[in-house]
Image (cartoon, rainbow over all chains, first blue to last red; front, side, top):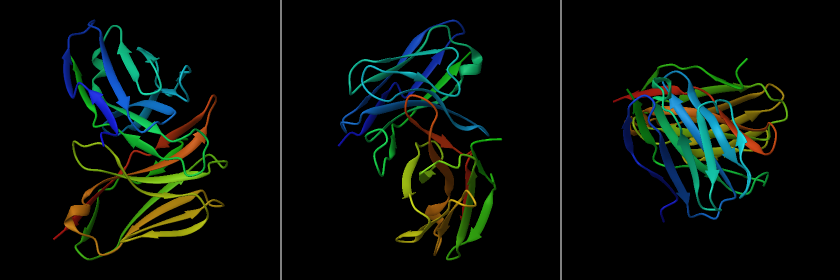
Length: 115
Length: 113
């Protein structure tokens, strides 16, 4: 009964370093999302994947790349980390795109600090 | 104008009182609306979803939707200290290849014993 699993839970990077945040869901959801949450800014969408094989930019995509590896997995990559990317990152997945009663479920989050 | 607006609070209510949380949204074609609860240091947890005008009740929680006024609210009856959290309003919208979920900045609720 795992739901949405994110790794790592915590990460500290130096400016310019790269890293990949991993996300997997076991609910057979088609759609997956990456959000960042900053104080006073709420949850902002970075990228999303409406279905396997597709990815699209959200509100704040600059500095990030994503890969929808298969239906279960959706990774977020920071190629050259910057202090402005210090944030809490959440992966989420949702039931069938456009379906009635679609809902969004979140992973436990990754606390990322870029020094 | 933000997609989803909430009063950031903080909102404080005494234990046993009714807490009222409000949200407005800008996209008239939105069809799905949600309330999430987020405890400090935790991920958002879905507590209510509403898709049609009117009220929807689930235990101590009632969601209210008025699409004409583009307004969503959440009432928490018999508030408990365990209800102290940040409540996020979310609206589903379509901005391209698929549906996206837009969030307000959240309202911080404190229930005072």
